[in-house]
Image (cartoon, rainbow, N blue to C red):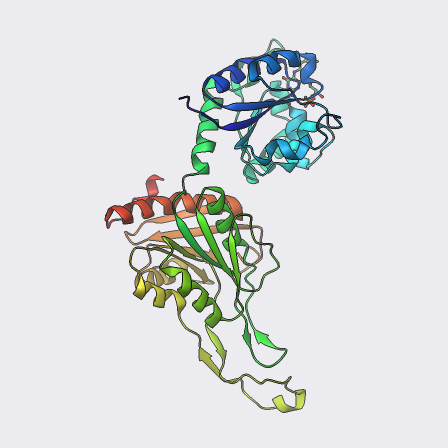
Length: 413
Ligand SMILES: Cc1cc2nc3c(=O)[nH]c(=O)nc-3n(C[C@H](O)[C@H](O)[C@H](O)COP(=O)(O)O)c2cc1C
């Protein structure tokens, strides 16, 4: 049985002088059991005949966006694919992908792909160092595309520099790493809470906070992509539930508590990203309170249930991950919450200033564990941050299952 047995890979080949190396790459992938469909750009066909790929992959080669045989190939090709690999990727295809351009089959496939993407660029050194290519590479990496660095060495131009297609060994390693991450959460049952809660004041008014739910949705999405069964309990947000996630909508803190309580014994991991309101009005008017009724009236508040503390008391086998939104004394306040609620890990959001986590597409987190480790996750898109968090949480679940108390040293991650 090969290393890539039954793995479905779409291999995009573009118009680089190194396109011939994709032939050997295809042979290796197929030899290791992968089912590979090849998509070639028009420029790629100037370098290698499609027939070569057709014979080696034992499948038709795709190249025409408006093909009569399969006009929906731009969507269907990656629908069931485990990975989209572009090797070699020209500067042109790389830059088009960053810009979201879709003017041929391969660029449309890249834009439509929901599976992980690995890109192995090959180009002249000056092209690789061009500010535009540097910027587009950064954009793609930020979005989660694994763009490899080209290798140093002799270039087709006769010059020596950085631009050669990464070696087959490196490309295969990247493919393997991307695939391994994909299903490493299989068997885990993940309960995620997300978004704000709303506490009614009267028939039309309510108390809430600025949480957008994006971090929790990103975690739910990433965990589902990596094979976990995921239930997302969400307060009111504008977000669409991620694919393959069971989504439960709630409004108040009490409803959120009930929904989480119902699923808690099922879960192996609880990730509590929701910004649950701490207070609610003691009295809720069933009608809309008139302006005049308010004069001089104070809004009397009472505490909402502390959901995480309560679930922590009931835990049997679950790994508990909390989030803290802090405006100051981040580490100190985070540590206190970690201890008080007996969490395995706490991720601290910084919610003051322009860089506030609330509503932003990107976020930075400080992660603390029971064993005193402190890890700073730099500002990055929330989906990538979610992936990093899952990388950190997974060993905790394995250790918990094995009955090992000490959490791993995160500094080594
Ligand atoms: C002989 C030759 C070699 C080329 N090699 C490369 C290359 O290695 N990398 C690259 O980015 N472009 C290279 N190009 C330019 C691309 O073929 C050109 O930008 C083309 O538009 C790429 O189209 P595609 O991205 O759709 O395949 C080469 C062009 C020629 C004529």
